[in-house]
Amino acid sequence: MFLEVKDLSVDLGEFKLKNINFSIDKGEYLVLIGPTGSGKSVLLETIIGFYTEDKGDILFKGKSIKNLAPEKRNIGIVYQDNVLFPNMNVYDNIAYGLKNKGFTNDEIKLKIDEISKILKIDHILNRSVDTLSGGEAQRTALARALIVEPEIILMDEPFSALDVSTQETLTNLIKQIGLKLNTTFIHVTHNFNDIWNLADKVGVMENGVIHQINTVSEVFSKPENEFVAKFVGIGNVFDGIIEKSDTNCVKVKISDNLALYSSDYEKCSIVHNGEKVTIAIRPENIIFSNECFKSSARNRLKGKVIKTEELGPIVNVHTEIDNVIFKGILTRNSYESLAIEKGKDIFLIFKSLNVKMIDSYTSFKS
Ligand SMILES: Nc1ncnc2c1ncn2[C@@H]1O[C@H](COP(=O)(O)OP(=O)(O)OP(=O)(O)O)[C@@H](O)[C@H]1O
Ligand SMILES: [Mg+2]
Image (tube, rainbow, N blue to C red; front, side, top):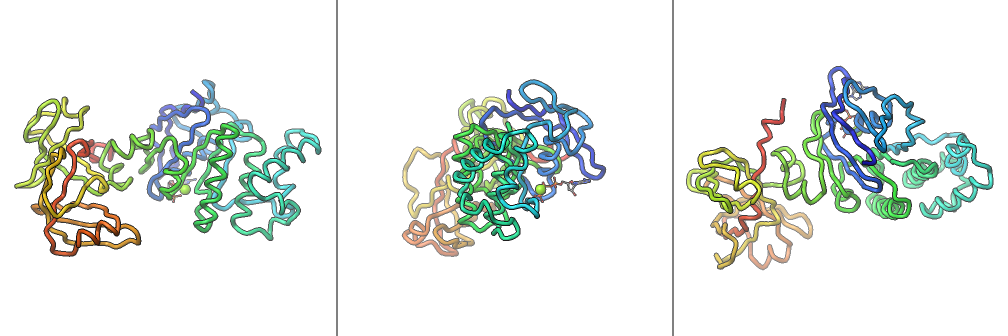
């Protein structure tokens, strides 16, 4: 394994990173998400060596790096607001790390030519860094981090201060660079687009722990607990009791007169009648229809629209069935053609396969 973080704990007094475990392969792109104050930045800064671990280890290609000084770890870091060296131009800022490594001026020039073309800053190499726009400064910071060819690049909300179109451009550049140089990234963000566009794996943090870290599809389709389910935007998370179970499909009672079918195979075989479970349904997996059409989807329920939220091309639709609120998403076209409005009766149709049984968040809170 390329990078392994093992049972890592860091004590900063009021805040603690607790028992962090994950590993990434060379060239993999890990995105870390979580609410503010959950410890994302502290984790990055521990990996780079600014904080000392109380317990656990960080292994790089199988060897512990925890006693190495930050500059010896061959890890680059890019922040939201990078401090460039103010009295130098763009070229000298980028060259700085290479000079320290003993490269000749000709070698440095070649390398800077290449990276500045990729990052589209070749036209501003002679500019003083005080004159740069946010996007240009961020590209310069990226160039400075990338040029020394670190084995891992850590990025702490690198694009969050930039406008959306610059964010997109830089995201595309990062993707190209990652593919070209096979760089390994750990990227902290609050922007879910970074997950869709960049991530191989995603980790979800809260209060100093990583609740789940896995491939994007695994985390989004099989959230391990209620916190992850809610945080990654699964709008429908319900507590229920197993009413009837066989190894392929279970019926989960979530209110007095409402039970849903779930055929989450891995879980079906291990739960029992009468047991408490938490289930999750992604809003986009609910189909809305004016008729209760026949289909293979086992869950076909009649609800009442209680709220709609128009968000440009999509519309969030909240419906109520036996005092339970279901959240769905429709395109504006479907919303209009179904003539959805508050108070309307509508059918909700979804597959038992899309009703996931997840672990209850309460067991993770300690
Ligand atoms: N040097 C420090 N000493 C003590 N506590 C710290 C230190 N640095 C950070 N903290 C605390 O650790 C917690 C986690 O901080 P961190 O900066 O890692 O959060 P974050 O997940 O990056 O949040 P955000 O999304 O707002 O950037 C916070 O409560 C913060 O106040
Ligand atoms: Mg942070």
